[in-house]
Length: 65
Image 1 (cartoon, rainbow, N blue to C red):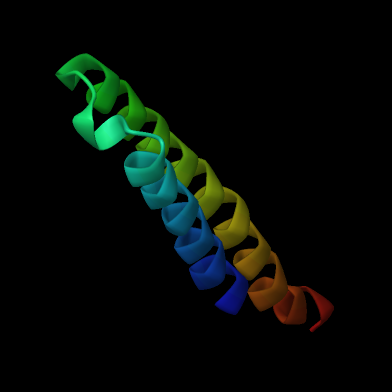
Image 2: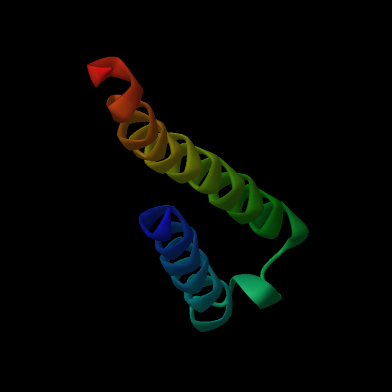
C-alpha cells in the first residue's frame, strides 16, 4: 500500500514540477488541457498497476489456504 501512495505522490510531484518549471501554467489552454489529460491517464495507469500489486500480495495468503 505504501508503494501505491508513494507512486502517486512521486508522479504528482513530477507533474507539478513540469507544470510550473516547464511553463505549462502559462501556456495556451489547449496545451494545459493536453497536459492535464496526460497527467490523469498517467495517474490512472500508475494506480492500476500498483493496486494490482497490492491485490496480489493481499490475496496471496488466501490462495495458500
